[in-house]
Image 1 (cartoon, helix red, strand yellow):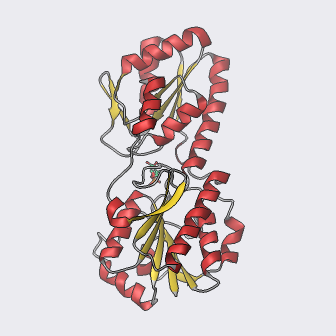
Image 2: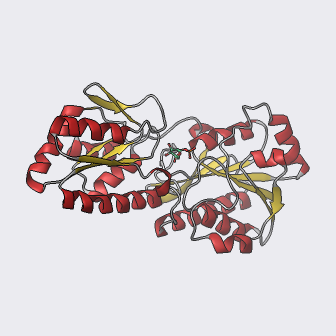
Image 3: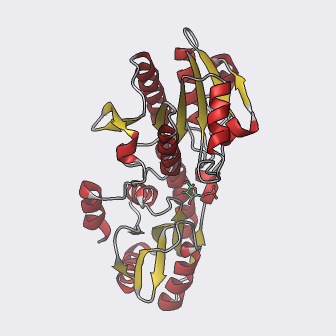
Length: 331
Ligand code: F6P
């Protein structure tokens, strides 16, 4: 068989090892073609044969050696060129490694008659149908490390500190960072709070510890006294805005940091590496069994397959037991 593989959407730690392990398994019996810059690579003709040896030096690095793109070629009227290119390369299937936006692209590809297998990745962990996406664990570990070094200076200067972390509309990165650092307060888009209650919590903590740490998800917005899900999926510098407001109300010196993309570009953790290998193996097995148009998923410690049309266009926000845990500490 002739198999194409690509990464699309925002990069995430663990992509290189996912590519390596998939290629290593399939190259014994099949030909593998790397498509550079996501689906766009088909249109631009940036497709070439790869071997696992090409990827081996990069398995411990973040980013993606295949480059990536957020361009939606299915919306841009390029579908005919895409189909033609896939036919020209005579590919039997395409393995797409991407987040929720890319999952919609995978679904569009299926509608055009392309056999697709999707591997979920994104630091946001918001792909519907799986508990974990490649890259999330690494980003959280990086956010924890940044928050803890920030905290040491907060302690020395007796300040309040606000850490704003990525995650788009989802609060997964903020929630896990808040829990792992036992932050004094955490704000996620999925849980509406009054700003005054957050500030009261920080003041109370400050009274005993003489510093306080607040973790906030980029998808949060301040509307008067309410902190809630924002209109824009990207950061509106809510961390800096909150720091200003906190300092104004409390009179306590307050600093904000927003590590942004630096938590996305880190080396993958062992968890993300093994998750990437499990997903790559499941994708390989799907191909061997002629199972297409599925996303590999990890639910309840079990690797599974879910039909792409069932999960495309949906996103997974903090809910259920995770929301209960959030409420217990910061609600
Ligand atoms: O989806 C991953 C993510 O890092 C989000 O957390 C963030 O909002 C967005 O991508 C940033 O996008 P870009 O890399 O295009 O600036």
